[in-house]
Length: 263
Image 1 (cartoon, rainbow, N blue to C red):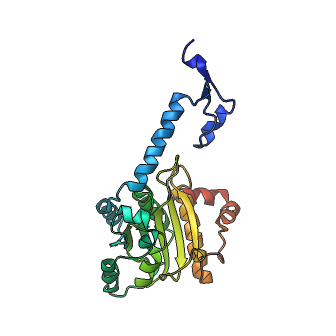
Image 2 (cartoon, rainbow, N blue to C red):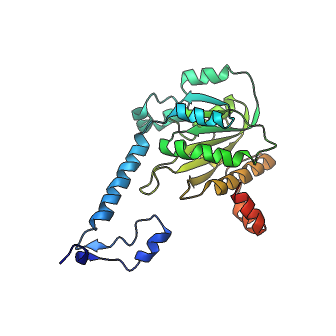
């Protein structure tokens, strides 16, 4: 009997073309076949690497500046990755040096300030943040945009302190999400109106799973632009701001939706 004869195919196998979820893997006796087992081990290793891999700050600054963005560099109060993982509170506030550096900058109020944070996946920040900014930037024609801040050892709430110090009306934190076994490079977007240190999660809106295999850049940019416009109109974000962007997109003429997707 050949190896292939020992494998029992799952009748749901055809559904695997529609999802990266681990379904219809089949079996070999009482175990997984070798190929799916090795793929699982690889995905687990990639997720662990995403958590511990350092953000290439220099490369990110260079990419952003080539796109015409001014950039700043900050660090949280977590001095290294070990402290960052063990002490989430340190990742939510700036280091003494970074806070002092931002406080000394000349006042440059902005409508929106983007912060790119490594979070729990530097892969996500490195791969998804710049293409997303490119997609949304063209929509913000009547917005004053502050410098893009790159934050190391960052948690979501770090953006609130940065936005408050730089006098931004709205801060948008682009941050690596907790890696999944099929998505080690998923980016999260957190929008906060009137940011200041101490804002709660209830004061933020979130867009998650931004990556080509999940919520792609045009769709994410559409949602982000909608939430930014509504936040400016209503003067708030969080539980009081609902994301109705999908309804707006669905009601648009077909040619308009295609135009938005190719922006």
